[in-house]
Length: 153
Ligand code: FES
Image (cartoon, rainbow, N blue to C red; front, side):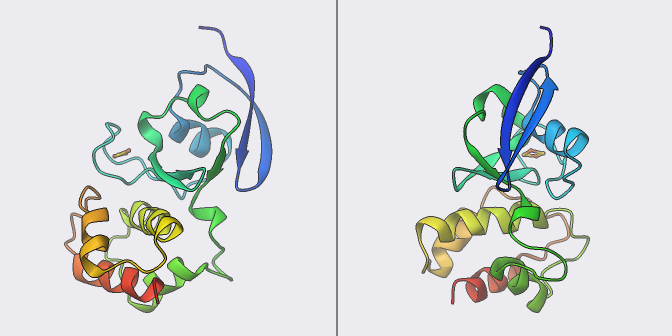
Protein backbone atom coordinates (compact mmCIF):
# COMPACT_ATOMS: atom_id res chain seq x y z
CA UNK A 1 0.00 0.00 0.00
CA UNK A 2 1.25 3.52 -0.69
CA UNK A 3 2.24 5.71 2.25
CA UNK A 4 -0.37 8.13 3.57
CA UNK A 5 -0.08 11.35 5.51
CA UNK A 6 -1.30 10.74 9.06
CA UNK A 7 -1.44 12.85 12.18
CA UNK A 8 -0.30 11.20 15.38
CA UNK A 9 -0.69 12.80 18.78
CA UNK A 10 2.38 11.79 20.76
CA UNK A 11 3.31 13.20 24.17
CA UNK A 12 0.91 16.08 23.66
CA UNK A 13 2.19 17.13 20.24
CA UNK A 14 0.69 16.56 16.81
CA UNK A 15 3.12 14.94 14.36
CA UNK A 16 2.44 14.66 10.65
CA UNK A 17 4.15 11.77 8.99
CA UNK A 18 4.02 9.96 5.71
CA UNK A 19 3.68 6.27 6.46
CA UNK A 20 2.26 2.99 5.24
CA UNK A 21 -0.53 2.65 7.77
CA UNK A 22 0.00 -1.03 8.57
CA UNK A 23 3.44 -0.10 9.96
CA UNK A 24 3.77 -0.93 13.66
CA UNK A 25 3.59 2.17 15.83
CA UNK A 26 6.92 1.21 17.45
CA UNK A 27 8.79 1.72 14.18
CA UNK A 28 7.25 5.15 13.66
CA UNK A 29 8.02 6.22 17.22
CA UNK A 30 11.64 5.12 17.03
CA UNK A 31 12.52 5.73 13.38
CA UNK A 32 10.42 8.75 12.42
CA UNK A 33 9.94 10.54 15.72
CA UNK A 34 13.27 9.47 17.28
CA UNK A 35 11.62 8.46 20.54
CA UNK A 36 13.82 5.64 21.78
CA UNK A 37 12.10 5.03 25.11
CA UNK A 38 9.98 2.23 23.65
CA UNK A 39 12.27 -0.74 22.94
CA UNK A 40 12.15 -3.49 20.37
CA UNK A 41 12.29 -6.78 22.24
CA UNK A 42 10.38 -9.62 20.61
CA UNK A 43 8.35 -7.80 17.98
CA UNK A 44 5.54 -10.26 18.69
CA UNK A 45 3.62 -8.58 21.49
CA UNK A 46 5.01 -10.97 24.08
CA UNK A 47 7.74 -9.23 26.09
CA UNK A 48 6.36 -5.75 26.83
CA UNK A 49 9.56 -3.79 26.04
CA UNK A 50 7.71 -1.65 23.47
CA UNK A 51 4.83 -0.65 25.76
CA UNK A 52 3.32 2.82 25.35
CA UNK A 53 0.09 4.37 26.62
CA UNK A 54 -2.82 4.80 24.24
CA UNK A 55 -5.49 6.95 25.88
CA UNK A 56 -3.85 6.08 29.21
CA UNK A 57 -3.97 2.31 28.68
CA UNK A 58 -0.88 0.11 28.15
CA UNK A 59 -0.45 -1.05 24.56
CA UNK A 60 2.26 -3.06 22.83
CA UNK A 61 3.40 -0.79 20.04
CA UNK A 62 5.27 -3.50 18.11
CA UNK A 63 1.96 -5.12 17.12
CA UNK A 64 -0.16 -1.98 16.90
CA UNK A 65 -0.59 -0.65 13.35
CA UNK A 66 -0.38 3.10 13.01
CA UNK A 67 -3.89 3.21 11.53
CA UNK A 68 -5.22 1.96 14.87
CA UNK A 69 -3.96 4.96 16.84
CA UNK A 70 -4.77 7.93 14.62
CA UNK A 71 -6.86 10.31 16.71
CA UNK A 72 -5.76 8.76 20.01
CA UNK A 73 -3.40 10.12 22.66
CA UNK A 74 -0.10 8.26 22.63
CA UNK A 75 2.37 8.64 25.49
CA UNK A 76 5.87 7.21 25.46
CA UNK A 77 8.44 7.02 28.24
CA UNK A 78 9.63 10.47 27.14
CA UNK A 79 6.16 11.83 27.90
CA UNK A 80 6.38 10.85 31.58
CA UNK A 81 9.38 13.02 32.36
CA UNK A 82 12.95 13.91 31.43
CA UNK A 83 16.36 12.94 32.77
CA UNK A 84 16.45 16.26 34.65
CA UNK A 85 12.85 16.00 35.86
CA UNK A 86 11.73 12.36 35.99
CA UNK A 87 8.05 11.61 36.50
CA UNK A 88 6.98 9.93 39.77
CA UNK A 89 7.12 6.37 38.40
CA UNK A 90 10.49 7.01 36.75
CA UNK A 91 11.79 8.52 40.02
CA UNK A 92 10.64 5.48 41.99
CA UNK A 93 12.51 3.17 39.60
CA UNK A 94 15.65 5.32 40.05
CA UNK A 95 15.28 5.40 43.84
CA UNK A 96 14.86 1.63 44.04
CA UNK A 97 17.67 1.02 41.52
CA UNK A 98 15.33 -1.24 39.60
CA UNK A 99 17.51 -1.47 36.49
CA UNK A 100 20.14 -4.02 35.67
CA UNK A 101 20.59 -3.97 31.91
CA UNK A 102 17.56 -1.65 31.76
CA UNK A 103 16.17 -2.96 28.50
CA UNK A 104 12.81 -3.99 29.93
CA UNK A 105 12.35 -0.86 32.04
CA UNK A 106 10.43 1.17 29.49
CA UNK A 107 7.79 -1.53 29.44
CA UNK A 108 7.78 -1.94 33.21
CA UNK A 109 7.40 1.79 33.83
CA UNK A 110 4.70 2.28 31.20
CA UNK A 111 2.79 -0.75 32.47
CA UNK A 112 2.91 0.54 36.04
CA UNK A 113 1.85 3.99 34.88
CA UNK A 114 -1.15 2.44 33.13
CA UNK A 115 -2.05 0.50 36.29
CA UNK A 116 -1.81 3.64 38.44
CA UNK A 117 -3.97 5.54 35.94
CA UNK A 118 -6.87 3.22 36.68
CA UNK A 119 -5.97 2.18 40.22
CA UNK A 120 -3.87 4.70 42.19
CA UNK A 121 -3.48 2.34 45.16
CA UNK A 122 -2.70 -1.15 43.85
CA UNK A 123 -1.75 -3.99 46.15
CA UNK A 124 1.52 -5.86 45.65
CA UNK A 125 -0.49 -8.74 44.22
CA UNK A 126 -2.17 -6.43 41.70
CA UNK A 127 1.24 -5.04 40.70
CA UNK A 128 2.63 -8.56 40.23
CA UNK A 129 -0.41 -9.53 38.19
CA UNK A 130 0.00 -6.46 36.01
CA UNK A 131 3.68 -7.16 35.35
CA UNK A 132 3.14 -10.84 34.69
CA UNK A 133 3.64 -10.51 30.93
CA UNK A 134 6.51 -8.02 31.05
CA UNK A 135 9.71 -10.00 30.74
CA UNK A 136 13.00 -9.16 32.49
CA UNK A 137 15.87 -11.46 31.69
CA UNK A 138 18.18 -10.04 34.37
CA UNK A 139 15.76 -11.13 37.09
CA UNK A 140 15.45 -7.77 38.86
CA UNK A 141 11.78 -8.34 39.58
CA UNK A 142 12.04 -7.74 43.33
CA UNK A 143 13.37 -4.19 42.82
CA UNK A 144 10.84 -3.54 40.05
CA UNK A 145 7.92 -4.50 42.31
CA UNK A 146 9.47 -2.37 45.09
CA UNK A 147 9.65 0.58 42.72
CA UNK A 148 6.05 0.11 41.66
CA UNK A 149 4.95 0.04 45.32
CA UNK A 150 6.97 3.20 45.95
CA UNK A 151 5.37 4.92 42.96
CA UNK A 152 1.93 4.02 44.28
CA UNK A 153 2.54 5.68 47.67
FE1 FES B 1 6.62 -5.52 21.64
FE2 FES B 1 8.09 -7.48 22.74
S1 FES B 1 8.74 -5.84 21.46
S2 FES B 1 6.01 -6.99 23.12
